[in-house]
Image (cartoon, rainbow, N blue to C red; front, side, top):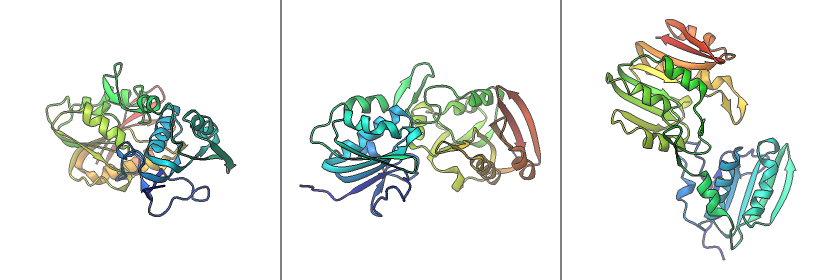
Length: 304
């Protein structure tokens, strides 16, 4: 007998494949304001719909969290594109002790199961997919976060070329705080707002950057940063959305930087060489300078 009627959803599954109830609680770390699935008490959800992440470690972790949150007999629907982990979901669910029915539609695999009374291998999956201190990086990180287990070469090139900033600034798409360490090394920086759409990145940054001048915000930069009068903005803008290249992401970041900067303020950004950002930068900024080019990346400084 279920003592709960709460529904949960993780991500935004295509509505034509699986639709979450209007009352469902959103748990995606990539949708600012969502609840945290890690904090959902065990056995308190009646049903759960998950658009599975593509990374194996992250997907098993999310599946384990979803199963743990369900009441015994509660329904789990989990789907993903076949080429982004969908073909592995059924096997992973069976390893957790679930009896699975699987269907294929529109290049997705859709798996449905009930939470069994006894789950197997959950703790291992939760342990593998949770936060950890990466000794090589010297930073706290979390599987699923951008470049979680390696230094992104674009960020490294940007870091090597950044000047010593002063005044107030922002790091758009701050990740786990790689660039912030360099920015805050300048004693003339008064305040650094660090924004990221990924709650896990923001939580790891809060562990990695303990400088009192830094302020972390879980926010989607595309919706506006809520910042004005800044001396500088630094960014390694994303150019993939759900795995597909989307140049409008970086273009949106650049426009938001213009809004946040004061006249004379500077934007420093790294971009993949093939991305046509000059066309976006030149109408918005007084001066655009290519500062470096290496390893398939370009570094720009743009003055408002």
